[in-house]
Image 1 (cartoon, rainbow, N blue to C red):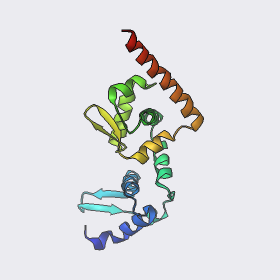
Image 2 (cartoon, rainbow, N blue to C red):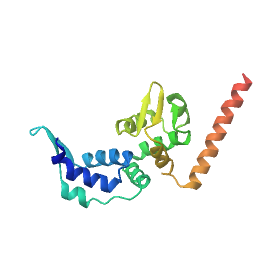
Image 3 (spheres, one colour):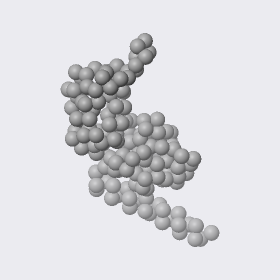
Image 4 (cartoon, one colour):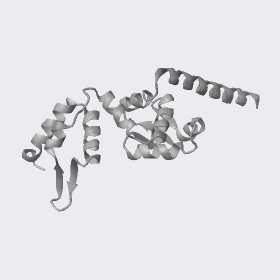
Length: 166
């Protein structure tokens, strides 16, 4: 599309996101999901509802936007993302699966991959951006995170102690 056609949309997106690349990409995905930005097969171009896009409320902080976006996902996907976030930016799928409380954790992480929140490279899942990891981690309150970290620490230490016995 020519800049003449997209200038108004790009100005609104820039104003709402302050040019933050992660915020821009996540906002465009959200607008598409909500039907406010959609491809038109008959016109062979993108179309948008400028009035609704302008009136759409957004938080000023990308972290709040990401956290709100994660809360729209199914609970099991949120849990899978939280488990992954506890172990850093990336982790092997076998390790994540061994730590998850949900037997279908890898299936739920695949949903996150489809949403563009997580990348899967070979046998590793990694967050697409550190702010996504931060938002996933902050979906649980601090007191629950402490208990969960303690639990994972006990499980990991028992695995290490078990390896020394063999």
